[in-house]
Length: 161
Image (tube, rainbow, N blue to C red):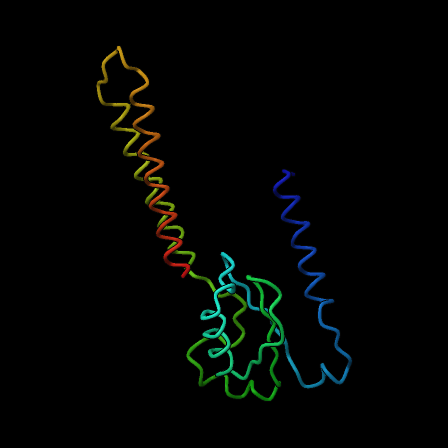
């Protein structure tokens, strides 16, 4: 197991422990209530407007914000009687993720970057560079890949706002 995987597992365990122990409930607090934690990719909950928008949407399903753990996690609760109104909503009242970009969009971006990198490599290697400058193709490929990566990062950051 890699160091990064171990670190991620340790952080996930710490987060779960925090979520279980941060707010103490007695049996009266739990009776008739249901709870959920909404998670955000890229720590979007540091933005006040995004938190307000999420709370407004969740309130339509009867959810009330209990606590904000950090920029990535917010706990909500609602009375179980509110379930009867779920069929009238145009979103999933049990969603637990607020993604700034869909999985399909991520796959499309990754595919586009790989395709462009492959095309650049194909043309750079296939192009007849002079024998006196053999590193020119490598430099060209590196520069183009850096530009593609920079554009992808800027696009993702704009989507995150």
